[in-house]
Length: 313
Image 1 (cartoon, rainbow, N blue to C red):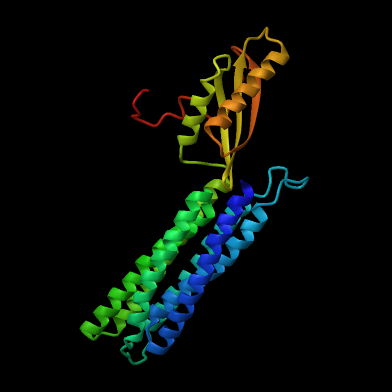
Image 2: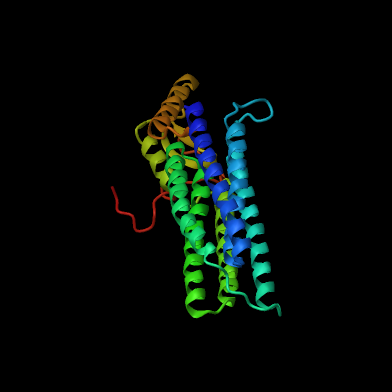
């Protein structure tokens, strides 16, 4: 299954690499020839997509490696690290485009109307990016890859920026005001920066072992309820590593129970969780005597996992 998943990620990355390479070259050349800063900025954005595709290929290769002495949890977080790097690449590109656009707006150089070459290339870009975006989301969902989904979100933003460039070019030709092209380039840059910050916040949540989604916890507690002998599940923690989940939890059992019998219950809990949640890589169950009271600060209880205003089952 891991090999199949890695193959899906590599396929999506090669599609992104090929498609973005063509679009990046076309837009950069068209931007230079037509004199459109907005088209050139859009081309620079597509160039970062080429770098991102190369990065995802490398991350897919690393994340598929099995665990070893230095990495007992495996290498799945290579995807998360790559996603974080993607956000920094996008932010840097967006900031550079914004600086260039603002410099051009406030310069004293004579305004020149861009040629229509940029217009036609931008139309091709919107169509091409739409297909590439679909491919990243499609394969990202199949592989359950946060890296591909992040790249899909980035490309979805690219569709918006290319559409904005297209509208801006049309307005520039209709109004005959060349400075609109530079203003549009600055707006494109701000959109790129916004996407970069959004992607960083999501990947940072995973790197910090956090989650704003209580859905997996709800599924987990349902699984534990299938084992009646496992009482008071608490201090439950779920960590994400790439597409995999690591689970730690405490349960309480009869204080007079033999260690062997308690171990059997723990194994049943583990199997119940993995049955409902195939993406779970490992489960660590800590056994406590029923009624045990300790100062346990971390982890969730069933009450913590229930969304506000949720209907009782």
